[in-house]
Image (cartoon, rainbow, N blue to C red):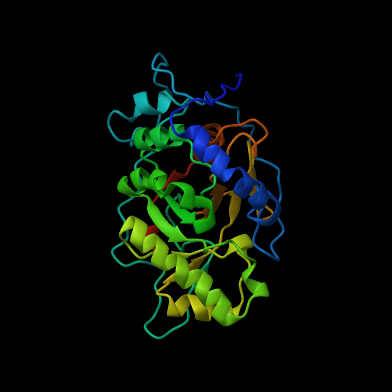
Length: 301
């Protein structure tokens, strides 16, 4: 299906694009690349199945496709507008969170959640792309995501992420300036992490409990620094979403219960003409084709 370009004259869009252009370019060179993976973990770009593009704007005329019988009532119409089938409702959150930092203990470092349920968790990094259609998509689909935000990527428009947070999506820490933390000493790492804790708490009203190091690069100084900043877990990932395909760390190239998936706030200039909503729809389709639904990460950590 042909890609529908977003209008450049959309209110406020031009200003944000100009303000973020240099940052977006920098993130491509020095930030989380579209092919980021956990250091030391081999990845495969082979998809489990082909994922087609979907319209960047929803179509009200689309007929609701068949979805999961356990999907929330009325979900079919909303999902059809994005060319998707409804997900099954996620299971009730566990009574006891399976990942917990013990008092006085080190900050856990996780790539997946220990669970037998067929759920995965979506995380979205950086914040350079601020697509209004993504807000609409998340409002209609009600798929939970956790946003790992970098101050240098979001400071031009903190307000963009407030409606996403109001929907219940998590706000988490991805440092002030997106450095490779392994090149910094403990105090410099602490400033990057604690500084972003303070900024995010000021803008969004809650101090984050989760932290992701840029590039997935961390060391024991990172863990110690994060612990002094009130972080409960360092969150890595098992899969990363590219434009149409998913990149897997495991050799079987499959999702597993509890896997954490990495995506990014990116737009057509970084996604070879694909919009963020198209990339997100491709990711959701991969998840659903493998029989999984999406749960809220903060309910498990």
